[in-house]
Image: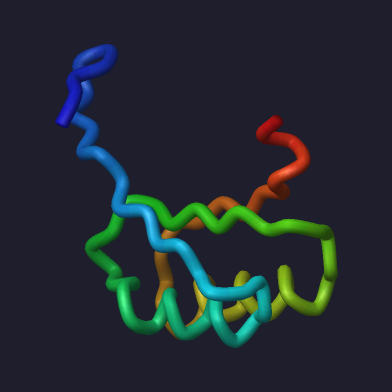
Length: 76
């Protein structure tokens, strides 16, 4: 845990997926996600709209957790 600007921030749990299929992201979210989480961040390899929509649907409807989906090309 670190303290930044007066906020306590725990180190994130990183989950590496075997592939970048929508089902892999959704399964990981269903296995590890719960409403007490502060944030789920998914890093995608490309901007396929169907995968983005499937992930956001699960995170908004099935497992309501604040989320951010970003693309790996922007992290370089």
